[in-house]
Length: 122
Image 1 (spheres, rainbow, N blue to C red):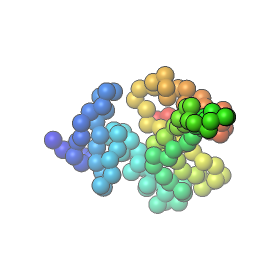
Image 2 (tube, rainbow, N blue to C red):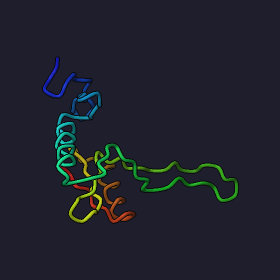
Image 3 (cartoon, helix red, strand yellow):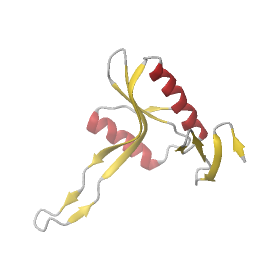
Image 4 (cartoon, rainbow, N blue to C red):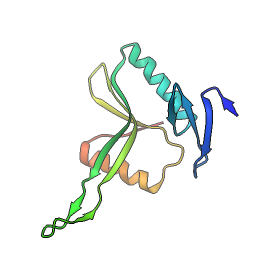
């Protein structure tokens, strides 16, 4: 069954439905709607350098000092959207959240600790 954003895809464990808009897949209708809003803001010149699904490595991979073998994989946070405001050029990281999982909360704290970036939650 379709909706205003396009064809619905299966639900996730948090009951959001993936949607397709303009050939792109989004984790939720809320995320798809925000992407459309941000694209309009970019077109109007309010923001620039708009990207989706941007990875930030909050903890790099760790290897054994002697053997060089991988001990721990990297830990990364994937931002729903990043862009820069025209007014000051600072980077904005946005996440459209329905459920704030403990894993997300830790990654949010690591983003601020490592990069000084406060995630804008919608």
